[in-house]
Length: 404
Image 1 (cartoon, one colour):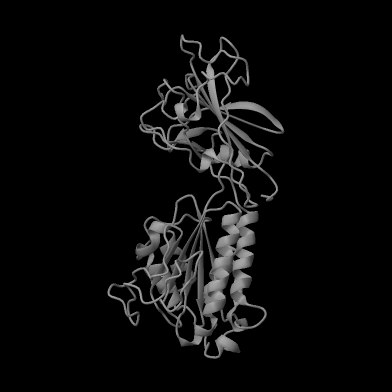
Image 2: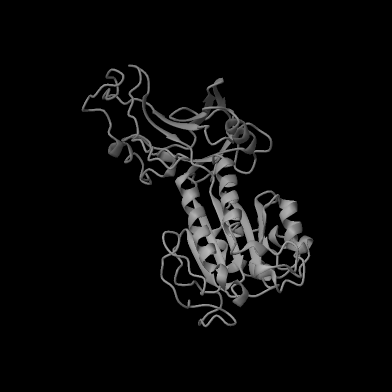
């Protein structure tokens, strides 16, 4: 999706007018009796403060937040309160395992700088990034990504100097950055990614694309098929929750040609498994032999990855349910969803029960009993993403139609 395109989600709350005619003033009126933003948030007990869906999100990093717009309808119609916002972009999760043995120490400054540059780029583009670093505490990431505090962590495992295996290093800065103190050497990186999953899976989100990155001067001893099976929840030591096919990509900063110069002086094996996973998943492979040169492989990989993430960012398919107007009660059976765009007239989507989307152009609640979000079914979401200036209306107060 081109970065210049803007998809606009319009949340429009419609509720039946009460007898006090509080919404019968002229359109755009400054009537002091018009409901306020604060008042509209009090309409139901679980009314929430505006979230990322209630403010504009821009890929250029600008501050585009706009307050909700209060708009009365025509006299005799239903009172409405609308909050216009761009839908949030889907988040991205990065897991990077880095060999911190002696042969890699000279590359630490370049790695630290590349991580911060990547984080800054994607955040300025309006993309929420979680980054997990699997490496010894000797690699310390400064602010703004890391905390800037260095030293031994509470974990570490063999050779880590910590008290607990794979605990957070001092530079950890959650919720966006977790550094697990887990030092490893050549040929050990793939088991670290696969078998440390239980200690970092809380950082991975079901609606994010996950990028797995391995940096080492050795070669994994695990087959590509075995890695895929474990990540996607099949076979021995299967991940739970697993990553769905097409939801993850593998990358590597490795000795692409085996034994060579620089950091690859001791690379006696070609990293065939890593290179195969990169090719199969459409990832990026940078040559570790170039570490320390003008062609910095860490900056090369993360700069290209940042461009892919930003240019390919897609809109999320779920929207927070906004609070209803003051004095009204949310009824999950009185909700309709309409979509439109610059090239199409408004059309109402039918509701599908959760888990029953199939190939329908429809929507569902995240929870049929206690809904918090409107979720577009995959077919409807794909169609909306493909349209220029797409808008989504969530309408409250009318009986839900065409329940599938």
